[in-house]
Image (tube, rainbow, N blue to C red; front, side, top):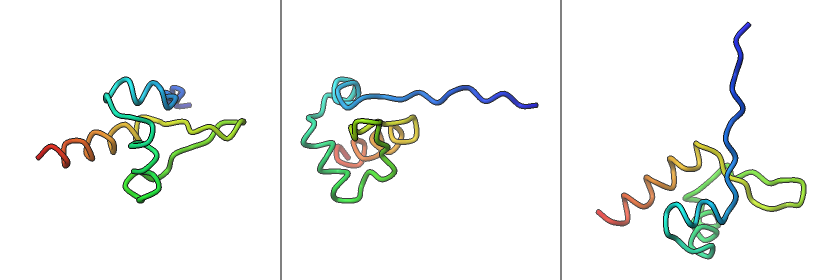
Length: 65
């Protein structure tokens, strides 16, 4: 039996602090379709996973190039 570790979940504030971006920017990327697959918690708040982090890093690298 293969044990799978629980995926890390990040809140919006954690993402904004980590990448030094605003909530509005993060939400705009989602609404423009640049950032897909963002989950929601039981309250309807956005939660991000490690795959979302990789996409955000690619978006930021693309904007600074």
